[in-house]
Length: 373
Image 1 (cartoon, rainbow, N blue to C red):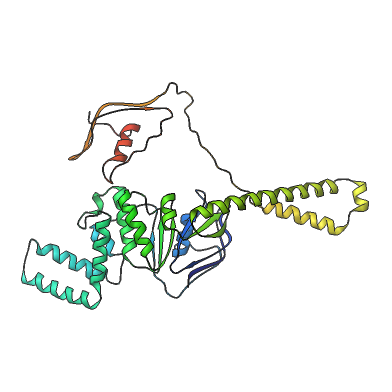
Image 2 (cartoon, rainbow, N blue to C red):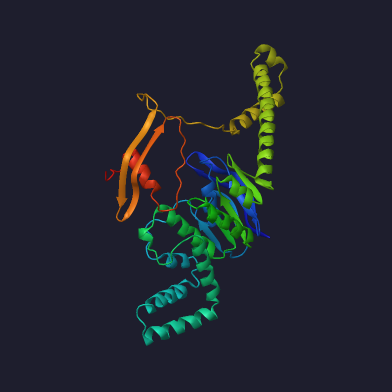
């Protein structure tokens, strides 16, 4: 069953077309991974599906009044309150009941009064009537799996933890269509494996963006390739897509070469001067004009670009050295007698749990933050 259908979609920012007469269909029960070059418009496409971005032209049709939940690429900014409150707000139809019940339950741990007990009983009955316990259990499960404390304050969380909170909010709402932009960012391996299984058991439609190839292979049932404004559907897994995409690009390259050869021949013919004017006909001239128009409108393949940023006056192989580095944030130790060498050509992966201090360590290494000693 079609959840959303995009037809002849046109969308451009300035002179850069993100969608150029694009078509796509998202169906119930499928897990679609959107792939494409950086800047191709993948995140914008999710916003189009969510109704946050309006097409310049074309149509987007939904199956009735479907519920859509979207995880954005960046963590929520300016959010406040507890983790539980923020996640529960992903279910607006029952959020206030859940939040009030959670607050009263927390108060009762330190202040047991008849007024609070009566309020808790009233809220409990309302939740029972609204099938709220199912949603409460779902919130607790997701928070546990993502290792999130319900009472933690959003203002105190790092960007990585905030991203996990936003993911939890998207997952608990039981939407018809789930839109996920880089859902595995900031997740450890165990959380990624849980998320894979969670999404496989999800009954609605899923559209997601990811650069994690293992995650794509495990989750995707179809690939939607956003290439030069066009949306091309590739049924099957990621490995099948890679093979078919490589074949399609070779075919396109061959066809373009034949087209360019023919255009060059016609341009040579039209420039033959007097001889050509005696023999040429208007039909052939019109055909040449059409060839010129098609070539002008053609958007060529964009090759891979490797950036190599160097500072001209650098010399030697040593890039960075730390000796006995110590730094703490409040009561949390970020670096304790840390020493290391980074040489030119090294490719170092910095890993660790969310909030452990990876970003802070990078700031220390770049000189954006002064160490304690």
